[in-house]
Amino acid sequence: MTKPGLGYILARPTIIAARKKGVSICQHLEGCESDPRKRGKRDRIIQKLKEAGTFQECQAVCEIGAGTGMFLEKVLELAHPSQYEVYETATDWVRYLKKAYSGNAECKFLFYQADGHTLKETKSETCNLVHAHGVFVYLPLLTTLDYIAEAIRICRPGGKIVFDCLPDTSFDLETIKAWQVSQWRFPVIIPDKLFRNWLAAHNLRIVSEFSEILGASVSNYFILQK
Image 1: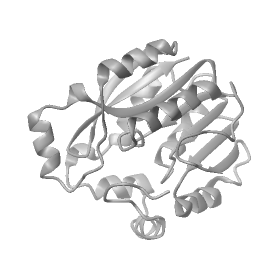
Image 2 (image 1 turned 135 degrees about the vertical axis):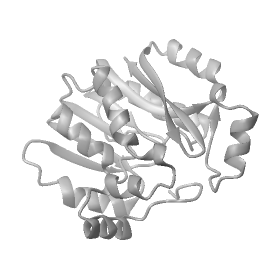
Image 3 (image 1 turned 60 degrees about the horizontal axis):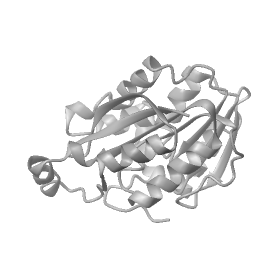
């Protein structure tokens, strides 16, 4: 599956650059951002998840689009899961993640080639946490709903589902102008009212939500409980 939009991050040059600096991949990428508000973004998101109790009783985790592993490394540190499943379309980052984490003695890692809309390798009601970051912001609405429906299927009762998206309530004429003058063309805007009705119809409780900078504006994070 080809990543839509501009700015896809290649694994090899990114890993080499981070190693030369002696920093993590997350620190390297955030340090390259021209907008200072984007520095520390990953840790701010993780802190919000921690405050919502996302990492409590979190033995099994599934991440959609783990990519560079920047969220994986923090979830591993804070949740101490015994199993972590990864769905990723970028084969170069899958190779890196396998090399970096497959030998972990405390957590079993399972890496799956993502098909772009399902989590078919994962059994129903087996995960305490299903999360995705910067993924649903560029997928078509129905594909996003497919993924969330799959997240509901594999999530245990009481488990958490976490992701960010771009609701229409966070867009106005000034926001659109900011995106138009930027280099990015990936945003897929979701009708907020319809989306919330869909979540309610699937018996998902909104534990918390917050906004975080993304591209030329912000995305909206949802922490949901099944």
